[in-house]
Amino acid sequence: MQSLDRKYKAILQQIAEGTQEYLFEKVHDPRMVIYPIQAYRTDTFGWEVDVLRLKTIPGRLQLWLDMFPNVGRPVLSVCYNSGDLDLVKKVAQAFTNHLHEKPDLAYRDLGPKGAGGQVLAEPLPQRFFGKALVESYYQSKFFTFYLPDRVIVTSRSLSRKVHRLAVRLTRSIASALEANHLSVRNYSAIENRAKVVQHLARERSYKLAIVVKTRDGFTCKICGFNFAEAYGELGRGYAEAHHIVPLSNLRKGVKTRATDLICVCSNCHRMLHRMDGHLSDVNRLRQLVR
Image 1 (cartoon, one colour):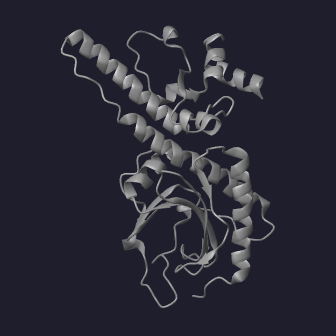
Image 2 (image 1 turned 30 degrees about the horizontal axis):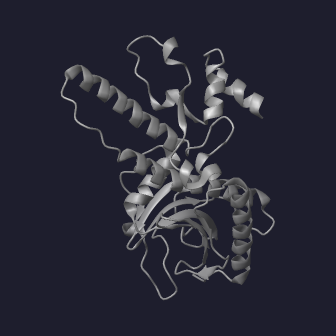
Image 3 (image 1 turned 90 degrees about the vertical axis):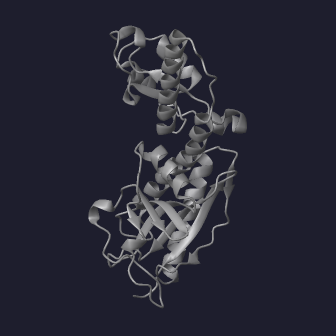
């Protein structure tokens, strides 16, 4: 197998530059550290480029263009690369709202390493393309999207997919850290049983709110506002959770699930509570905002 030539290096750098510009426009997190765009050869018969990292968070956002999936053509992928598998799984959970208990791909899936590099032993299954995958290989751990599109210079649709994925992935990296920071909050012990019941109810509600905010990237699902992007460190880890149907409209004893809540900013939260308390309120407010 031959390594990709410099034509593909130029394509990768062009997509990476556009991705950085899009991230600057859409994500305003002061922790973002942008790398100079420079693609480097990989041992997977291709090229990789670092796009950005977030201060205080290990790992980096990368683009790869290589033959690693072993499907007979170059494949572009967007990934979060870190040496910490637990952190990679947290980012994956923040992105997908699904716990990845074990890697989807691991060192057992690798083919023999030759003089030119290494690829998967078997071609990447078609069902894995476009899907969020956790990978664990020796020192490197990845949360990756392999894109099914053929890589050509003029593919604007491919670039747009990369841009959108990069924004969501950057916010997921940030929200994984924010959720971890919030979840270490400690409570004092309360002996009175009535107070214990109230305490446990509050704690469950608090944990459910964290799940919802992490799922939504601490970003308002009505207007797109993100406190960390607007206020920097002061806004990190802050957002509000809104019951799509107000608790006052529900029967007693009904259990709240994560699907019953969305993440909102303070302004939109206020406006939602001025509305009718119907399921349609969220969509109605989105239309008003836009």
